[in-house]
Length: 393
Ligand SMILES: Nc1ncnc2c1ncn2[C@@H]1O[C@H](COP(=O)(O)OP(=O)(O)OP(=O)(O)O)[C@@H](O)[C@H]1O
Ligand SMILES: [Mg+2]
Image 1 (cartoon, rainbow, N blue to C red):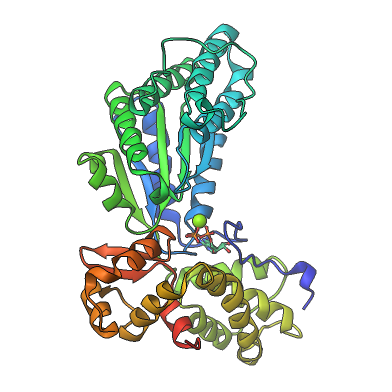
Image 2 (cartoon, helix red, strand yellow):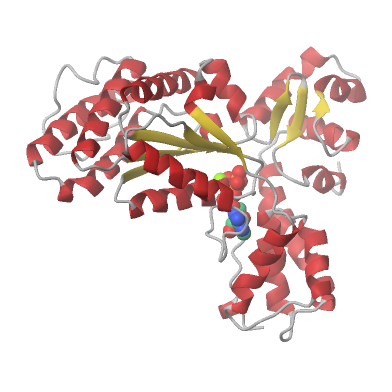
């Protein structure tokens, strides 16, 4: 059928034509926004889940919800090799720019921007002269606030001041952090401490995160009280009804239908994983001669969808691994699809567990595997074991 009208959207962070099966999380976030705006104590939300389940998409939807309530919003994507100081500064700058036109006292905004600039300029990389980044704020940097160089103190002061500006307007500020498991350990600790401080004063600023399934343990290893700061929402594959809805609703808007058998076959192939749902849906649409899309169309299109996933979803990640890391993952894949004890991986490779720690740690750092519980690891990418077993060693 006409590829121009194809509604499906496989791809990292691609907004799906229908956000299916996330009503509970959306409702929870509405409550969070409402309570925080009223100064009520409330835990913020952190989304966790495997690759391609829709964390980024949901985080972006949360951001739109906050914007609809006229909140100031900013978003960052954490990177393992980067301090969050500058990204946080840049995203709070965005948030304040959203609020500034509605604020009656321009001097309050300027005052905050001065603090923000001072905060940004304490970046260690900038101090060493390795970079000439300038925050693009044309007020002079203030002194004596959020500029101590200790990120915990500075973030706390910055957040309190930003929350103050939002309070003037009766709104809040939401800072979204994607790939939050990649925030460096000292920064995570500073971030939790700042959120903790803010939750005690009832300031309307929240940090909303998304990351891989081990993010809660990263947070609690950093601060034991992190469970009281965040409500964890595990984002998982879609159940049958939601997966069907994700396919049917966008097609219906183009007057296209699926036969029941086609939907059975699609659920079997995509296993409810949102990325796969979009990928199979997209190819099936393109190759089907007309509506309704039938089970034969699915059979014909599946190999092409799998080929695209092998390159775009699995292959791009596999290529990031070194030969030793690949051996490690192949050993995992031979054991089973669910998370496996690291001891079993070592045994099947005939190696001492300690000699494999470098490979394991760097795979965790690259976000390819995660530690499901102590001594147990799993693939972050759904169906990755199956993909590896089909690869030549
Ligand atoms: N609720 C949903 N219904 C239908 N499709 C969805 C849904 N959520 C996400 N998708 C689709 O799934 C794909 C992956 O979404 P997204 O990039 O948000 O996943 P992610 O969890 O952030 O993955 P990663 O861990 O790789 O960053 C996109 O193509 C998106 O359109
Ligand atoms: Mg993502």
